[in-house]
Image (cartoon, rainbow, N blue to C red; front, side, top):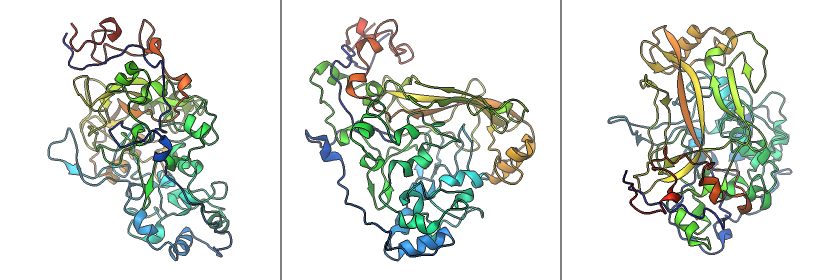
Length: 478
């Protein structure tokens, strides 16, 4: 077997680096950096206290926003041009789909957690940066519906409730007077708890990052980084992307935004950077404090059985969680990836891959990346052969009726799909790049963590004839 990729995998991480906090997606790229990584961290001005500025009273979130816009006149318009508002990208060619160019995102994609947002606005929109999702489609052109408090209020004083509106009982005046620069708690309200609970989705984003030790995340723990130190923000547009919803390679963040790509003293380690992502070595495991969901079987939902958040819930089915999760390693080029779209046929010969990373051993831009892979069984139309998005939350939803046919009919109609009335459950996989919980350099993977009998790498699956250390990293090996 002749290899077309050159990888020099000897002496893995004798010297390790402290890399920039990985973000929703990091891709190492050539950027102008200096010897001082702090030059890549934005300088923030102190936020002005609003305690004596905002008077109120307020009875709705929209009233708060109107008050904010009296001074911050462009803020709502800026937010309304971001994906945090539209939940959809600009039109982009979708790989794997002939002549399909469209905008995609949470608003119109299917996943293998809670499956789809459309027709489930009551609960899903508690993580949207706006109000008034009782009526669908919501009025996304109304500036007053922008929720300033979601990102700026003290989270001990403010929370979102059904349909994206303020939770019942919130003191809107106290919340508005508490506004400040966004903290980890603001971002974490959605990104730590998405999918139905703490650390359900990502595995590397959970509530332990609110007050982490340096051994949990060196940037947030040792240096007290905020999310916005890496997710740099301009005009309310927050840098970063996630493979679960994005297919383009725009708006990315890289370790090399702050760090030199070849900063190791040992050139053998520097040589690895061409084929191994920084995260692979510096995030040896995730879900260090709180377990993360790795399987979800919707087919068992609705049964009257003993319930437990980590094993079984009647409204959702069976789960498997893991702590100290060992990532799976795959080639990824950081570029345009295939994405399953609503109505695509499922794979009848194996699991349907919803967002497989692009890249291979033959791709000179690809690197070995760590991933959390979430495997699920979810409903599909056995006649039309595509995944079905059920209505789970709200009137007629499965969580109320526990009736799959009616819940699937409602969800299909809301998402523009035909439902034959015949359904089953099929296996799907989703891929989540591991980019947070960066360990101190002392905890990084060492040579024998990857090489040798008990190494974490599946070299054959990655396209090698075996452990590269056995053939010395030659360009051609047989």
